[in-house]
Amino acid sequence: MEKLEKRLKEIDKKIDRFRIRIKDSKDLKAVEGVFDTFTLKTLYNLANKGYIDALGGVISTGKEANIHHAFGCGQEEQQEREIAIKVYRISTSNFRAMQSYLIGDPRFKNVRHEKRSIVFAWTKKELRNLKKAQSAGVRVPEPFVERDNVLLMEFIGEDEIPAPQLREVSLTPGEARKAFDTTVEYVRKLYHANLVHGDLSEFNILMHGREVVFIDMGQSVTLDHPNAMEFLMRDIHNVTRFFRKKGVGIEEEAVVDAVLGE
Image 1: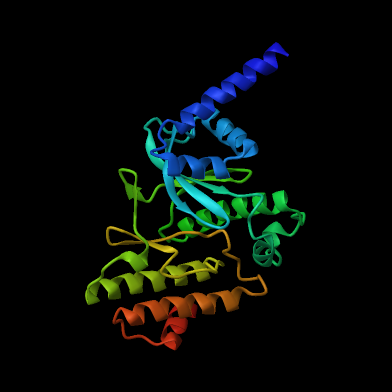
Image 2: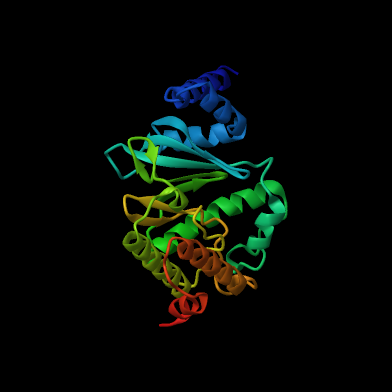
């Protein structure tokens, strides 16, 4: 009993450390809303392994997940760095939508059809997709580690300020064309690496300075997924639609040819 009480006190101290950098009551409310006991234990274990030193404010909130700024480093790294912590909600995630991307993906064919297993598989899937994209030469947040419903990755931004979404950035015609060319090249690289983003739009592309960064790759699928080509055509349509509004003269058919061609 004494050992258990001591352990619980240690967990409480670690949880308090996570709250040190929370900036205001709004952030605190968001943290307490997503960090249930299970998630706090997962974060505690990651902190024990040296991945997390302190938790900062909320970067973004969504239906399925919250992303938090933090400081930490990998087990082999000595220098503290800014990182992003993505926490998928087990209780409120859209499991039917998640299943539509998991079913048909041979990497996750044995996942049980219940909430916790689906969220854990989704978290693991995003880490694997980010690694695959990175290996293909696509600029994405560098993934570090996943545990259960928590994913740790590179923070895209500086001094706790996240890089803006593509839709939020003012671009000159020349800058828009350059960003478009990079985006299409990244879609092509993913395709030839046997991967489709699956939800690409101006909301899931960041501009770090003038660097294009693809994010949110939990739904990305391999080409043997039954809906892979449908997802790819949707990605191409979204990208073409956005950049045409920015003055880039291009037709969808030309983008399809550029992506599918060698």
